[in-house]
Image 1 (cartoon, chains in turn blue, purple):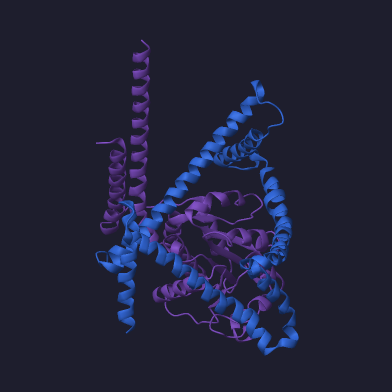
Image 2 (cartoon, chains in turn cyan, orange):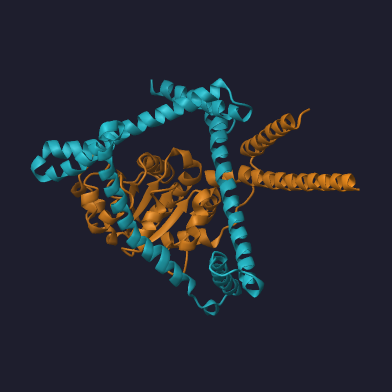
Length: 212
Length: 283
């Protein structure tokens, strides 16, 4: 039986993969069906996963087995229920309170850490002596880093019109930005091709057994 | 033929050629070799220089949609960590990360031989919360993970006997496909608790993490995408799935470069023809 289910799973996987790929030719019922099944299955999977892996162990089990020590969990439980009231138009306003609390808490937690990591540490990491390195490549790289950061930041300085000599760093900044966009594009292509490789590997190896 | 029909047919030809460019090297590997980069070497060196017996975390912050890129990294990291005598704790910030961890442990055990669950490795599973969970681990590990995925209590797992908080962990490797993931580990585990963090990400998110590999050591090395996975395999001295998959990856990239060049030449010719026509009509 497990072997039969495995084979069935592979055939279903192959069918849905080909159905999705068929969109590259043109929109068709096979693609539509596969797309809608995927969306429905994902939503169903998430619902069940959330109930059994988050709500049951972290809330219901604790309240049922040891209410005296976990009664505080009633607070997030009611906040969660208030959030769900969004679907009832007359009680919709109640959902704003848990959302406000969540947004405020998240912002507060992230603000402190992000200020240290994304601001202070990043500035400190740019304040380097490029000539402390022994390798010429490292020295050149450090100089490029400093020039790139300064010119890139200057490009976004709009309080003074950038003309004449003041336009030069801005133009250098554009070049750095373009190179970084190009690198991002290259990485994105690599990621998308990796997805295609994954699917074709599945079709050729697991389904058709062409690759051993 | 109308221009719109011609564009549609050309698009289909591009899709077909791209599919062939990926499928053929998968069936007939070209034997292309990957060249290592310092970013991957730094991550390798972090694992390599950590003493035997250290307890480390590999966080599986991804799901099956990105296994092609991240699973080879996970296998190589676990194999490397075990070969250096490290004890591996698997955590997951993504719901299906826990299953990815099980698959990776099983695959590496099939290769290296059986390891003892609870002594050499443990899977603590998924926890919702991202950064908040990591902060909780920094205060008290047991509170966040009272049990592992099989239901074993914290105290029954020998590997965790010396682990009180995140500060008892020698390094964290987060294999991350998005949020929550590597960024939360950098911001919290390294910048707040001082634990060394290395990362493996999908290629699409790798450029965003490059600034963290800096003088402040916010990130000890970064593995970006399939190529970095192949590089890690190269450093480990074997050719795994990532190395093999770099064959179609390379061919596809060459094809895309050719297509970009053709597209630019055609756009240039089109503009030139339009300009000539405009000049002729003005004359």
